[in-house]
Length: 256
Image (tube, rainbow, N blue to C red):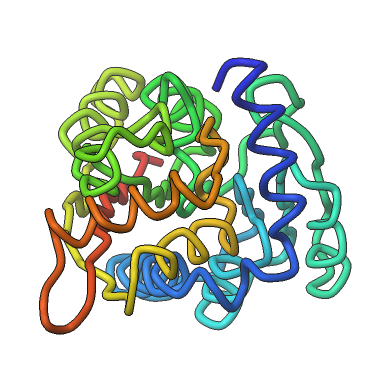
């Protein structure tokens, strides 16, 4: 995430912070699924320490705490409001750009849901996580792949996050950083469509969740009308209009 994108993302997610938790239903589902996969693979072992990157309003935080005993938890986010989440769960809060803050030393779990896509070099962040992780620890990360919001991209939108990638790239980053010390326990991808009554409802969804942080559109009545007409013409169906989500994930275990 370059500085400009980081600033825009911070402003966008700060504006949408109150509406994000309820509006981001797909992100909540992804976070819960990631935590459940980790629990199935690690047999819900307790963690002495854990570090979550991009905690937001707490979808993954709560999903992890519902499944694991974590003695010491640190959560990070760009948005200062996330400190209230940390306080509510008894975690330490690390505010700021994850590329420049000082990470906790050797956590036994490093996890992140729906944040990697905001990095212009997601593999570099994952390599750092793999190197920082304590021996015997676990990584659990999700992001989004190149089919994310493909309807918007087809219509010329600039709402695409900079770090969309395939799961193979995540696996390669962990294996490169781990020098043979990692077992890739689970890696995969999925594609889901959310359906909305109209293109305006799609835009409202993006605004509520802040995921249009890099979009540069200035909307007028005329441009909204043109956007709606083109969206319906290209993707409209009897049930409304779709918006594609393309979650990707990786879970890996480091040798003791």
